[in-house]
Image 1 (cartoon, rainbow, N blue to C red):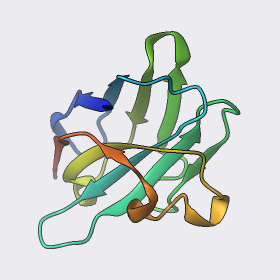
Image 2: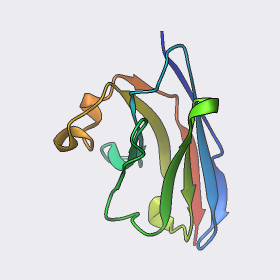
Image 3: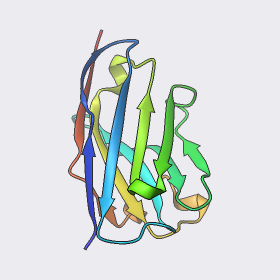
Length: 126
């Protein structure tokens, strides 16, 4: 069984920063693709960023490129999402997800991810 636990969400003013963490346990994640998704009320879950655990290759949604940075600490089995220059439209529940290695064509598809955390709320006030 795989467990993912997110933390670090909260309330921040527009222009501020937050760092989300996702601690993984239960399996060895040396080859897993790790991703961050978000879901705002009334909207579908959308891709935010992903990192290939072994190759350190990152991909970002256009809406967050240049503002968000995904990283990982293999020794701690933890993935981070540094969010800078936050905007009110970034408000959502943020989810961490893990998948067996994915072809690039699938990395933005939440249906291809096998394990999910419970989510952490991020609220950006204007």
